[in-house]
Image (cartoon, rainbow over all chains, first blue to last red; front, top):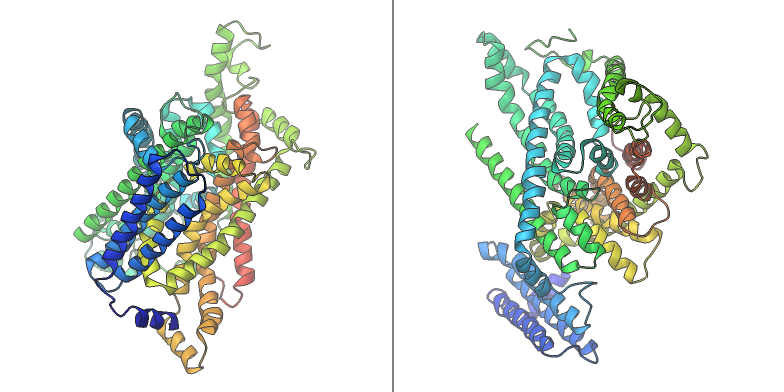
Length: 318
Length: 299
């Protein structure tokens, strides 16, 4: 509280001050990186580090200033500036200390490698995301919904299977992966199976909880309308289950890609982002590793946002 | 009553019978299905081995299915012998229980590190709006990023700077567990309602007292919920870290060795140990939660 007051007193011009400061910090860091690109490696690195830290402090004040208020700019700018400043600062520091690419590659090197290896990485992403994560996600979701319907229909099954499902959902995927890959082969279907299994449990648990969440009042009302079980299901049970199911889908959407990548660490036929990461770590090709991580991150975030958008659309229509 | 749900639901808690018998029934069904499934899964490989002229000491594919060297699904006898050979001196460096303990220790150390870091970050997030706006979108986005993909690289990096042995695995486990914990803690620190905050104000509590006496205790249930989510992820992290670094113990090292040697029976046994370890870790955190948050009625 007191700190905020001091800040306000020291900098009376609150708004309108952030953007210039951010520009100064970003351009300064860019300038440092460009200066460092000219020579091979500076003899003494610490003055450059001091410069980077000073510019980051300027940037921090800029972020603080631009985060005031409720305008759309005040919501987006601080986050965007943080990412840009972090990348630029990493670039400058890594160049100043001449860190070898085999240890930590500079962001510009990663961007170059990303462009140079784009075809390989896109093919890897096709295997990992479309064939393994997405297909496994769809199969796991459908199987989970089917199992949940059975469990809700037959109470015996619910009481027998659900405790196991809850127990098995805390089993680490890496323990499962080698066995399934040995059983189903090195090709992509084995990874699809692994993803489907990991998606299955959260979907079953949440779908059963959702299908049972219908309010007794609503069910009574349907009963008094002499609605058939199918009508009751369509009008009451299913709509009230949807929010639960989408929660599970959102969680699983991120798990699917992560587990596909981890499963690939245990054996592939030479495709996939996880395979690429593992093989390039062994060869100290960390620029490609980072490029693969960037590709995976973009896909992961897009898939998550897509499922979230679908959730909003479906829930609004119901 | 048990098999046909009526559309009008009676209060369920009142007539909820024990899950024990249905669970036993499902376990029994799984055991009964296991034998034909094992025969079916192994007979293909057995037939191929026989066709290639291998002498397995048996005539038909079906008879050979239980005695393959590297079965797809091990037969009960193979399972039992693999289990005993991997766990009989329980604390020998090559036995699975010892390695599971090592991995479990790494994961718990990682979770402890992650909780401390998560508390610091959550405090910053709650205290400073500009910090929240600058970093929260990236923290949320990082949940959708395959962080575990960074584990092999982090392992190499930490090894370069001389961090070796137990610690790099714990750091990687902490790194993976840290984001869900930070987010959960931030949610928890914000959870006291205005009435409770008003009460603290009428007591003239200092901000530090409000934090220590109200906000931190209120955040504990959130901490444990996110710890349970993070525990499995951290376990995956430490196993992947063991696979991708030079390690001399741990389930990950055993997995990597036996995966290379194609010893499927051992892989199955390690899988069961890994699964048990995950379940035990979550149960441990649950027990700790009950111990720490005694003032809450049991959920």
